[in-house]
Amino acid sequence: MAKIMNKTTFLTLSLLISIFLFCTPGYTQIKTVNVIVGNNSVGTGIINKGTVYVPVKSVTNALGKSCKWNPRQKRIIINGKNVVGKAIRYRSTIYIPYYEIANCTGIASIYDGKSQSVIYSYEANSSNIASFMGNTKLIKTASIPKSSNIKSNTVAIKAPAGGFIEEPFIPVVGENDVFKVAVTNVENKDQVKAQSVSNPSNKFVIVHLSQQNVSDEVQIYTGKFALMDNKQRIYEYSEGLSNFWLVVLRPGGSNFGYIVFEVPQESEPAKLILSTTSRPPLALNLK
Image 1: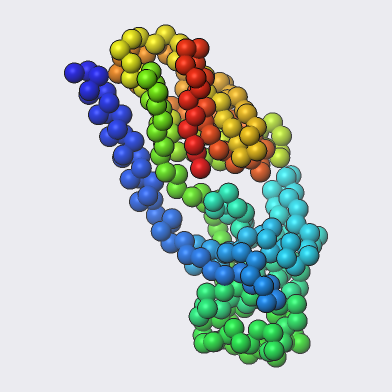
Image 2: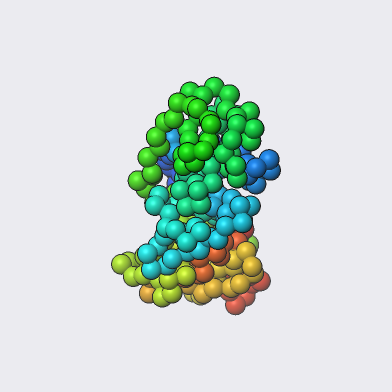
């Protein structure tokens, strides 16, 4: 009976966390827009809480402009100029307000609400972008040169007040004949327990998880977790920053907490791997 109750509690908790993630305000507000440089589509932007964002690397590459990260100031630098608005992270891609690229490069930018497109034009004139304008009441413009003959009702857009947003994580479960492991959330952080990363080019990845003994025997050694990223690099977790200790698990017993990994900024968590002495590694896909 105790084993059944523990499994029920385990599944109920995972379901509640999943519901909480999908009901968190803000995620449902995100819509996509086309991003166009000249006459070419270079990717997809997003609208979050009324602000239009574009993928900074895709756009700067298409424009032939430099894009760097200043780890000391924690700012993006485009064409030698600091981006004023704060960046957001969505699906492992860095976005900035669309008008920030215009402010740093002087290249005209227009958000056309009718076609749901952001257009960057090398030459701000009617032959290049007037055809995208449609209803001028839906147009939001920024940094159009004085030589432009485009006339429209412009609407000022404020820079976002927040920092990073994250895509809601869908809980994943994996098991063998001894352990069932559930990952309920994965977060990126600059600090954990008031401690910063050892290298400004790194970040912390926090994996929230539970581990249950589904066998009929007491498990004295419950194994060790490691993280594999999208480049198949393996990272060990920091015991001092984590809140998940090795414990003896009776049949049906569960262990809950989080483990912390320090990885490069560009690293994307791909798999959580549990290694034990008696079984092949148990890998959970995080993407």
